[in-house]
Length: 462
Image (cartoon, rainbow, N blue to C red; front, top):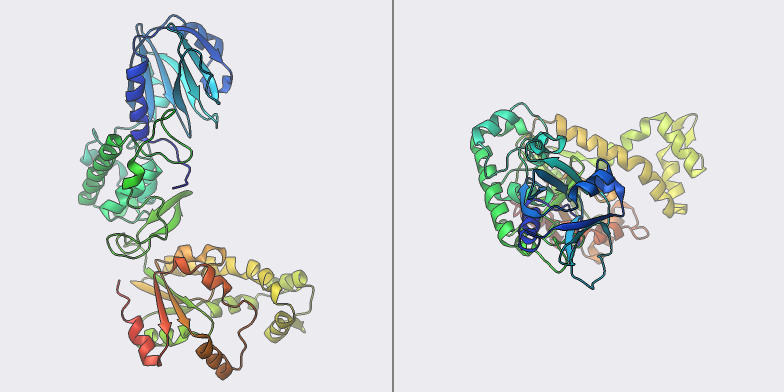
């Protein structure tokens, strides 16, 4: 799995355990600082204070490492994105990104290695370190938190539950990987408003947080491309991940595909069938090859009282905006108006002669379509909404849908349907659909009558 992540509680716990086996009892004889930005405070004071100190113990609070010595001194460390401590033996070269090096009395060196240079080291004392700004922002861990207190603290938050679980002030230790896992196991949609979650579900989230973290700690954390806790040390929990990093793979529980969305700017994997957001309608997109029978399904859904939004009609509605069509006319360098009235036939004729220019139109129209679809979903009071949409993959419009159904058809039958409509397939008309076929939750092959197609659609159950 090729992903970039920040070390989370299990990875930091693994680092702590490794350090306690290799540095306790060792005395610092020198501190070499190559990157001053790693040090919070005066680097010279940092160096002078640590020379002569003997490591006593390393503990962990949230994602922070707390180094104690045979004195009142304490060193705080936050690894941030890719920070790690590497033991270097006598005669060996320092690690590639060793920015702070602790020289030990037996000739070994402890290198703080950080290719991104985001990590921090800071000195304090036993009496004062819990009062530092860093520690003031660390809440209780799932192992220690009181569910009733946590529930009380989050009751008035309307932000998505994923963002709440990531808030280290409220509860520390969970990062992006483990939040996705906890939400999946708890069957909670990551965008569910926090204030809509009841106490029973909060208890469940905490219970799974403890289970997931304990399992990850037992496996040495999760090793991914950009992070492992120390040189030559690999975690194995990535082999047990249920949801994280598995977008468009099939959920082992329901066999629907995992989806990837962004919540608070963080990539998020969830199952749309197992994790339903009760605050918004279930959204189902119907797409497929040209002239494959999408409208047959849409007409059937309308006949049984379902709400179906035709996104082609949405797109066409934007052409009523004279400012937009004038802008389009300027970009295409062709006339699209007759007495300041937009002429869709002129646009069609232009595209027949210049098919590659469809990209220019899509770049202007599709973001507007995405915004409008999002608005429809947010304002709807329906339990579910269907969208007939030819290009859900443009500008990641597919992120708005829980499920995507694709309708496919043979070349012969497709040509027959197009002839009935007086249309041509066009150059590469189905390329985008075929490129994104792996994102579909259900593929229906239209190889029979309209009734056959509808019956196949009825097999889709959510």
